[in-house]
Image (tube, rainbow, N blue to C red; front, side, top):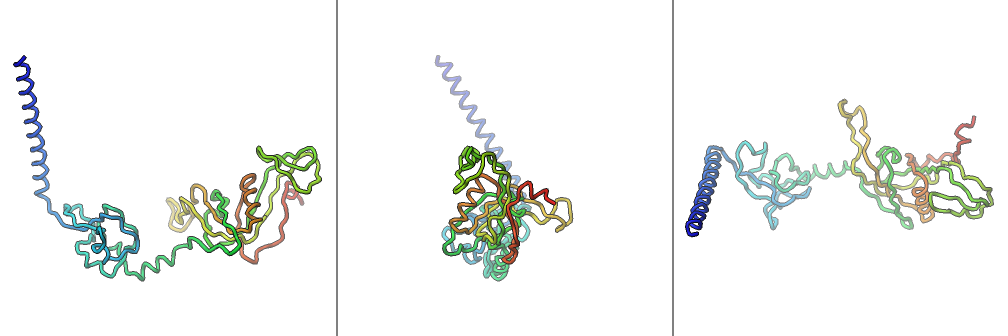
Length: 280
């Protein structure tokens, strides 16, 4: 029994010694490899830097936004910042993420940042007093191909499939819902397909999209084609309470399309059915 215990202890000692020798060899190999490399100290982002942050704020912030790190010269980015004083009077052009090296070209004078901001599309406009905001999800082809922005005015076109009417013509069945037709004295049958502009100059308050359109076609010269966005757009409108009700009904039971429109572009319209489509 004692012999077995002694053998086990000897095996454990040998394993531990072997592990120690192996770790020491690996560390020594790493040190020998690093020792032959030329290194440089550069500033690396240690806390996310928002766009517009001043160069003076980098070290003054608590905790600081950056720290000096020693990196192999071959890993140092071109134009990497090695002296924070060189960024005095500049601001970050874009958001900088943790782990990035500070790159001088990403820092610009404040006037340039103001110019860039002015060139951005307006994200949101104020909703007029007495109006309600209503967001509607639309595919790109029904939202002007994605070429729509806050402040635009649009015509809202709605289109419905046919709805079966009840025996008295007082209600229609829309999906699983029965919708009463106020004041109706119709006939049994069906309400046929119909399309109509229900709103003119509806104000767009905000547009949200995960993939905005790109103004460069794949494999084509820049500016020759427009790449359509993928996914839906959430378009928020400023509407009267009555128009909110009409829009929600159209979104739930039919389909909505937007058409670009100026304030003077409100020509005569009418409800379009299959008869009008094929009329001479």
